[in-house]
View 1 (tube, rainbow, N blue to C red):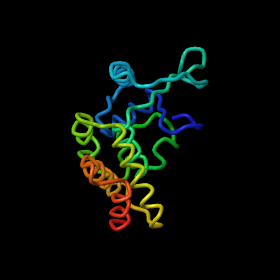
View 2: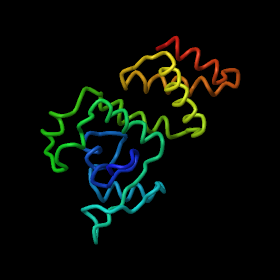
View 3: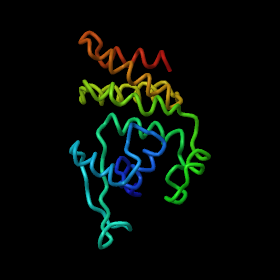
Length: 171
C-alpha cells in the first residue's frame, strides 16, 4: 500500500489479504491482477520497487471490497508494517480476531445489488453519527451498523437526518 493514500493496494498487498480470506481476494498476485482487470478496478502507476523500471501498479478495489479490507486492517493495524514475505503461521500470529467467514462471505451479498451512492451515504451517516456522539465502535460492529443503515436508507422515509438520530442512539 502506498504511503500517500489509503485505498490503493499493490497486487502483492491484495494477495496477502487474500491469504487471510479477506473479501474473497485471490491468494496470488496474478490472480489479484486478473480480478482487478476483469472487474475494471481503478489503477495507477507509482514509483516503487517490484515493478519493471521501478514502476508499481496499485489498484483501488470497489467500495464493498474496500470496506471489508478496511475492517480487517482496523483490527490488524500492523498487517502491512512488517515484511511483505510471511508464512501462513506469521499471518495467523499477527492477525486479530475477525471471523474469516464474515470477511469472505459478506462480499457476494453486498456486491449483488449494491447501490453505490446509498452505500457511501450509509458510511457517511454512521461516521458522522459516531463523531457527533463522541463514540468509537469496534470495526465488526461498525460494519454491521453500516449495512443496517444501508438497508434502512432503501426506504425514502428514512432521511439522512433520521438515520443520524438512530445512529447516535445506537452508539
